[in-house]
Image (cartoon, rainbow, N blue to C red):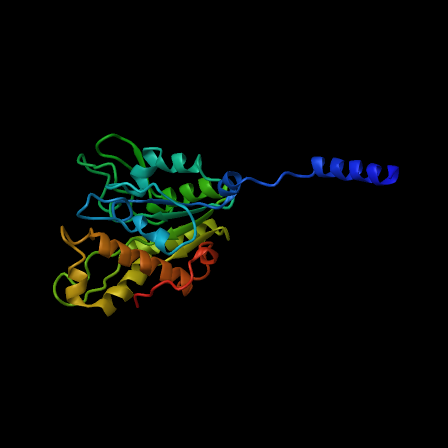
Length: 266
């Protein structure tokens, strides 16, 4: 009996020193989170238009924090400290999607510099704002610097090309091309970090719009040629998830987190 009691005490002591089981809240805190950085085509809309970032949680098994905001470019998102804000939130294992391009166009050299236009080129070119004298860098520079902020925290980054404008606006299909698609690829290649990958969201939506046709695509655009309604935003989210699923541009860190049975758009 004494032997049994001694063993019981030893067993209880071992249990008391074992690692505690994580509480549900602690498990949730350790789980990966998806952060989104982008412009109005990704951001929460106003009831008339909506961004695809508001719909991607339907197709990915991760909590989503949508930090996209309308009217921003890679430059203004940087200068306003928004990339830094996200970097202060991310932890190892999180995923960050960076998607810009719509508002990065134009030139910063004139007196009418809008604070969003990036310096032309795809490398280390530097311009000077004709309005403020600010040093303005390239799209590749801003995106690469942001990606490094996140990978330094142990997060992975998906550089995403921006969504296309209405490709059926004339009544005929006009897919076109935008230089900022290539700039995202250049940024990925320049970083040469396996934690940074690329997905051609633009091409994924192009494929979907081509299949969808004129009338249905035009119905997505209630306001202008760039911003879609909620249905169009959901379509873009589906296209993004499908691009990840089929590994359109290779495997990304989002692939393991896709929900099963996601719909396809092309």
